[in-house]
Image (cartoon, rainbow, N blue to C red; front, side, top):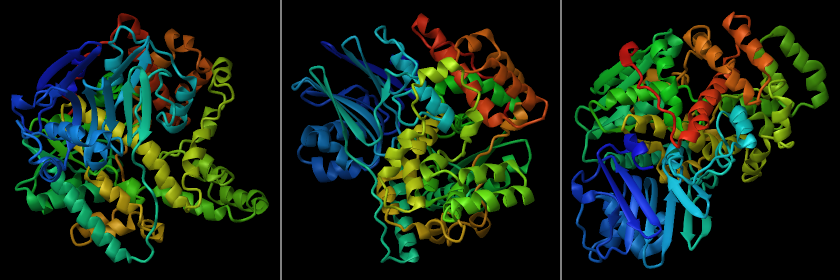
Length: 617
């Protein structure tokens, strides 16, 4: 279980056994890289033992303000601070922590095991209870090494994956393996398990503060967040895309770090898939030591099996593959990377937020007028798949209309599921879980509801999952300064009209960084990290998909209608239609089954050959 996670901690390994309790740790040494900070770590009296993944950024202040004079320290690590903080405050210690973390503490005196996960879910933590045994780890593949672990596929979770692009509320794709939700703790004692939520974001807009004042406060918090996240005993750099978020991080880091190292990646598939020119201009502007690379389709397809292996939980984030390659490049120079994840979810950075608010206004027109007059006119004068999709969506309430940032069209699933699989769902609607999320902010405006949805679903289960797995696959620690919980809480006090204003996304962030970020970057529309999947499915990826999806093993799973799969592939490969948004999750799901389900009989995840970097340069 421990050593299958070698990529997460190649620097050191340790184990601890106390009767029925076993703890194992792999270490990526960032703070106090000496052997003194070896894990599992014990208190001086050996009454508490910890295994810990992540970083407590405010460990210096915690040690000074709450522990100095009470405890004797033998390391300079945040691990020892965390352990002693628990000794003093017990389970309430999580309230003091500013960081990304998943940890477990064994209390020998009380015979109690305490687990906790950070507020936003940057670091993963999974557990299962089988044959009267509680088993936990940072990744599912580690759990699968345990001889008592068996698995059961959850039809509901599989349906959620195809609906959202990730598993939203089900435990995982395995019905008997759970993730500890972000902002929660778990206590195990004498066979009893208690899960408790200790944090959630509350949207309470402050209308009495001007947009300028809000922007100034955002910038102050971001500066302090970066100051804390630059604490490291090893070299750090920045992932630079050339967009507003990563440029802001680069600008602020370069103010405090001499010759900041920056890293960028792009596809050799046209300007719409490549931001390298913008990234290079930013690097030149701030005098960074810049490194970039081009990723071609052969390298992308060649890495695909390892992408599935390292992701553990399948998500449809194709940008995870280039993220691995750039993390792998960065690992030659640094051990820590800062990135801009989270800014879009805090300040409304995705264009879809604007489209959804427009649709909400459009829905104010009586349905009979929309359906009989306006929708037909729109489809007649602007005939396109997008217009057809939006007119269809205008007939749906928000909780059925806004499922994810990629805006997957639920109608694409029609006819895909086999009768057997439909029956296994028992009539459960995969969109039903969203109602609880939207109900949390029932009185809020449309944008706030979408932002909360993305913070609770999309961010921890997709964006941060991808960021953690792909950076850790390259033994790189990725830090996300926009997700300092203080900044998240403050962003929730900013009115929606300061986030999305006259169609401009991230308005308050643009105002806040106007004197820092170059104008050409501030004025750029969001690009994200698009991957040329449609074209790839007409090349090597299409051949790969045919080999897997039309194989007997795939058909025997009896999830989908083979004839529909064959038609989708044929229409896409011949250029008669674009089905890549459906083919991609189907391909991911089949490869995941082969590695994590078919191979379980051998009590190990399938061995996947190392990728060849020959096609990446």
